[in-house]
Length: 329
Image 1 (tube, rainbow, N blue to C red):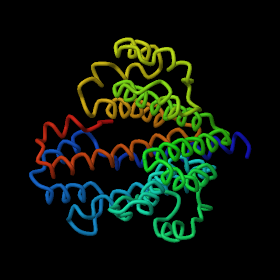
Image 2: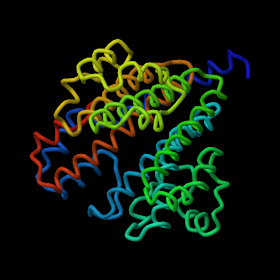
Image 3: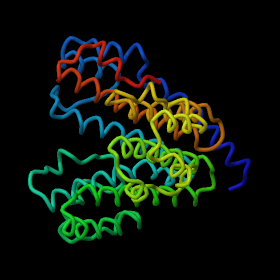
């Protein structure tokens, strides 16, 4: 494809994405949802905003939201040149579904259907056959290999967290492979940022749990902008020194001591804050896949926010407190 033709195609894609931005929820709409008097009113507002549900019941909310997100990703895959690269957004859901399927196999008390997401590249309907035959050929190479090893890891350790970690690392490796094989640097930029954020969050949690450096090194994910040496230098230091070091990186504005300390949602909010800022930058792209990627990231954030609102309503949390947990774009 000539550069001129590629630019022309992406001009159309960017125009299409910017037109589709109108369907995204504004701050005003989020607040209306948070202040809805009951879940029935919440369903009605969401329908007014373009969402559809098979029934006005919380039993269907997760699958309906997953379906909406999957449809939006599919729409972007169809209009984007080399849309197969957008599989990097589906792989985390494949990883999540694999974790659920394996747990259902090795432990009682797990319901795969209630844990699975429709947003992965492998249809949910395939997982029964996959686990029965232990045939992981539909997955990317890293995930397939990690899935084959997962049961063996569990049988040796009886610790499902260990195969979760291996699947997560394999997922990132496969995302990185797709990004590096693409012709657009924005894919690599995105995956590397996701890896850095995962490592920062894991480092903070490991230090707060007083885990040794060897533990953190075992869960560290390669491929980010921050190598293991960046973390080794500050691991075990007091939190002020840690965040002082983080403040010198591109993630400093999102991750700060006052944001993450004493708040159970602090690190998740910090990660979301950085990715939302990244998303807005991508949405302003004209050439390349940036606008498409930004749109998908904002859609993912929107689905998470709706889940926060629903769970808050169900738990009887005040609208003001729910609004505090929403990640506004």
